[in-house]
Image 1: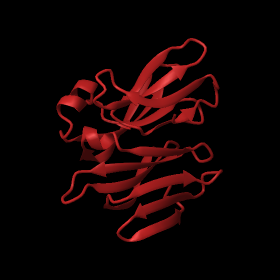
Image 2 (image 1 turned 180 degrees about the horizontal axis):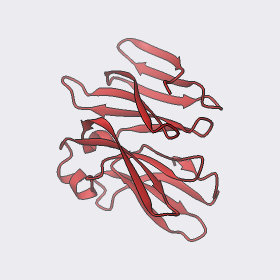
Image 3 (image 1 turned 45 degrees about the vertical axis):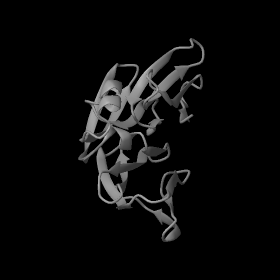
Image 4 (image 1 turned 120 degrees about the vertical axis):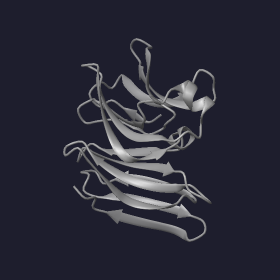
Length: 186
């Protein structure tokens, strides 16, 4: 379970397996009709926006088949903002490549107070993947890299109620847990 639609409390986003059960996707579920709609492939990073649109991390060329047959294929990381009422999708490049299996490990936290999102995404690197923490502002249509480093341990992220600060808890077992509270660039 990722998020409830604040404009239509009868809809929510959740992460579930693809039909082959080899990767995951984000789905929108409508309680009244029982309808499910695929929102994004091979990711767990999605949320409703304050206006009822959906923001998701992914790549335009990514399909379930591609994710299962080529899980290590590099592809451009993008943010998609979909307007379900108008049937349109606006894609924004984050400027780096990742892979389908790394998309599947990504997470997102959205702030309805500031209309910003913070995304945890991974990029290929040796000996361990590189974690990137990126903010994306829907109001200004800009992305900023907040933090980057080796992906060790678990990171959790949360916005303050009005979206002024983002808290990032990095549970890197090799260096100890570190809490950072930042005012993201805008």
